Amino acid sequence: IPMLKANATGDVYAIWADERNGGRYDIFLNYSNDHGATWQTDDIKLTGDSHLFVIDPAIEVVGDKVVVAWVQTDVRDTFTVVTRTSMDRGATWSELRTIYKESSQPVTPKLTYGTNGLTACWATALGAGCAGSGDFGTAWTKWAKVEGTDRTGLVLTQVDPQGRTHLVSNQRSEDGKSAGLFYSHGDGTSGFTAATPVSRKPLYQSKAIAPALAVDSKGGVFIAWMDYFYIKPLVAATFSVDGGKSWREPYVLSYFGRTDEQLFPVVNSNTDGGVTL
Image (cartoon, rainbow, N blue to C red; front, top):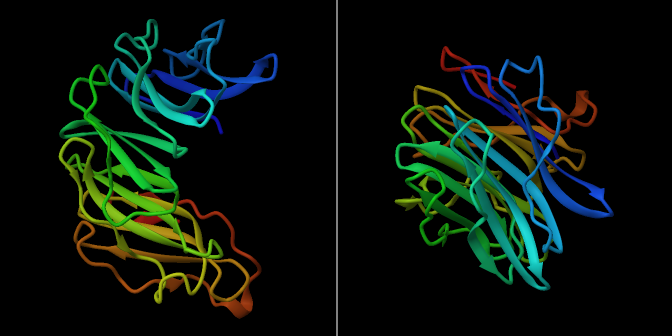
């Protein structure tokens, strides 16, 4: 899935994976320094030539600095999350840095930048893992599992104006037939709070997938997802007004008898403290 990220001065970055080099995926990036009006003539290949497989690129931009991450396999049955950094608006890039290397495959890495610097998080079958960097990716802390996560299929992260990263993880039931959503906050350097369930209870009674996350400047955190309690998917949601300390009971946003299927919610915070779904 391609990703776009921009800064306030008109730099726009696009990152994606493709298999133009003979069937094996590589990670590519291109950028514009004029709000997207023009782009570099040649794409920048960020991966080397020794990997077996790459997937799931992520990107974060702060001023002239850019950091990218992705999942990479160099040796069979050993999986890594790797990063590279540019300090000059994408013109030159650091060497590859490995922040996770285990036998459990990571997916959906995410990057945020807050008070304590960069945070990288990802999902694995053993739970959500995170690491932090105070120097924009030159050195990273040892990764740590977020307490209370297990059988994690994906993670979403978003940083609030106070520099704290909010994390939503999708966790499968033990039999693999259902899934629930869990919430945590913190950062990759100082750690995350223990994850707590936020989707419908009893947990795993209905499948909750495809979450969307938004945070605002007033301590509001809003999570929406596809909920299968009524068999067909409907959009359900919950929210917190105290920065994730307490949560409203989950609710379906539209009466199930008068709507068709509702799929893949997207939510954004507004400047007035509300959200648009």
